[in-house]
Length: 128
Image 1 (cartoon, rainbow, N blue to C red):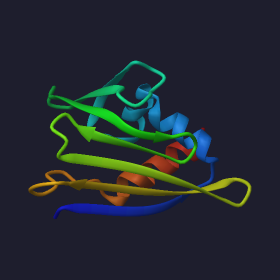
Image 2: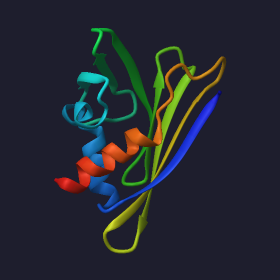
Image 3: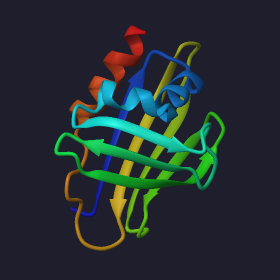
Image 4: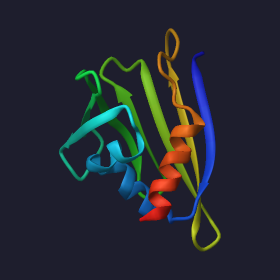
């Protein structure tokens, strides 16, 4: 599999969701396999490096390669092969459609996200 795409509706504004997602302290709240994440510089801009540590102690690193305020952001792995993009579309007064898209340029996705991960995000962010 070279790509994965999901769409989910969340009862929060795009700005609220983006701020939550880009805050590295929040990542372990909705991605169970991540125990710690950090970002430098923060707040993020194109070029910001996010590093996260999984339960086995392994660190992974990603760079912000695109960002449009309240619209979308995209990360890429250091080698540029793996990408993940989040797109946000306001729906009504208090909801957002989040499109999650991840892909690789070569090979296959080793550990693709599932809709369950985004459902967990939805539950966490709608509860705060």
